[in-house]
Image: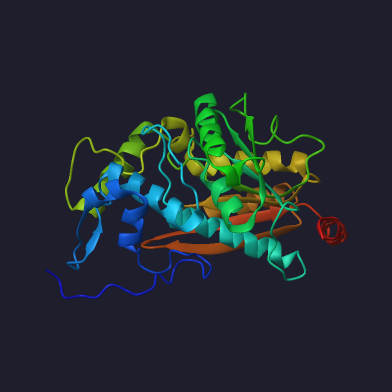
Length: 318
């Protein structure tokens, strides 16, 4: 047993993230009693969740949503991606900071803000967190009807989400914004967690690395602890190809959105993304570094609005 001490605060998380401090396991178990079956000592000898077990991870995230965000019903098929709540919440908080810069220095909240979540998935996690933390309205798109059906079940089961999230099916997987954004839409910010892997083989290798890091064990056919069906994890060409498609297509909706944003997991992809943004003549590009535990990522944001158009947008949202 190690005598090392756990940090009292996860300082890599956003300052407004409620999970900066270590989990209150007793409160989380009270929220979801089944979680108690998956608590075991970690390398510090302290009680912790078994993060190498996908059932434990899902129960933990259910408990976090219940205890911290007031979401009492959150379920979806086990085959779908189970998002880690603290990291997903960080994206929302950084986007609130971005919107604050164009909101006279005030944190934007309530119905005046409309967000678009690209690839919302069966868990509908970004809209849930955006509604819970800031009261924003969301359009949430996906290419899978089953995922949208699951998301609708979650919305219907939680009164706080009703009338706040509108689901839209992307019927053509070649497109990202086309067929989702209408000419009438005015969207303050778009969010996206792109598919990370270029192939099923890449996804399998990534899973093996993750399980080995979490459990210290090597396995030929590991179960992904955050699950995920193919469309959530795999896109031909991987993350960079997806984001380049997004950048190119965003130009078509330059006046419908203030900020387009995406997570970028691989820092090596930034150079290609910046070149693509130059080609489409983005007026402004921002990159925000994020760190969640031992993993780093960043958000790239861009807008096509001129300074005058940004001012007009601000006043229309005031």
